[in-house]
Length: 365
DNA sequence: GAGGCGTGGCG
DNA sequence: TCGCCAAGCCT
Image: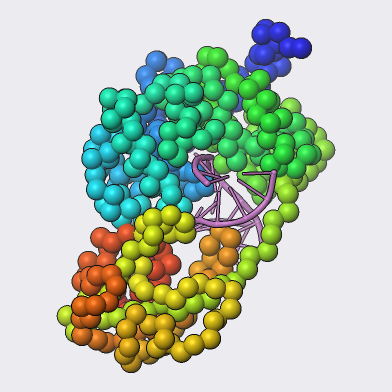
């Protein structure tokens, strides 16, 4: 069994120091970060900024997150401001970023921190873990980066770096516990936050999925996958399933005043709580029946085009129908001015649908 | 444990 | 062009 002293052996310290030296010179500058120089001086990043960015970064690229992070910070400068915001405003601000359960949990988490923690984030991995939307990764990341706790932070980047460094050939996700143990061994007590960010920067900029820049890597003398000449073969992952195709119809009803019929989706599940135009069910096969039977109200519905959109686990093909109409008071939902669509919580697939029916509906799409 | 859950960029 | 996938969480 490892003694506590073995938890940070000479070899591990050497690897950590190599990485931290690399990070001091090559760290990325991101809106939610402080510099390694500031970190070494004892400064800490704002926990609200780190938490907000980490939730946005779940399965999402840095480039996509940046403008959303800045927008949220401008609208809601503190976690208390976010906690006090209306749900619809948060969902509308999140629209386009995807995985909308994150936005619902973000709001719940802000409310919990504001009400039960006096507006201050818990400063340990255990205290953070289990707050809405905070799992293994995010609790460790916030604890390490915002509070300098020696938490073992493992995301997709770290999995790639570790699997290559040790040439771990067991497939993910089964190999996660082994990899996490390796990360724990490597994490230094001195600069755990910088170490975590360094591992992720390395994975994002050097140890990339395709064509990694091994010549520039601080681990290139240590990497077992590189020794075997095939870093790209790691990490090994379980085979994934084929995506089924679902089909349906979407209905864009426009009044002479330029208003569009919208409705809100149910709170849970796909695009939960987001806004949409009326649609049929999305099914594996078109379920027969005429357009009139499925439309939100009878009328002259004309086909405007077909929208294809790829979700995580299926591909959707929506036939878009449009009609000019008088405002139908009995229709389910509400009538929204077309020039106010940007303020709605419209997911990207619905922006595509509306843009197909009304090419001038969005200034920018 | 495995499947549900978005989107845009890139090779 | 299009398959792949990016700082995961929840059930």
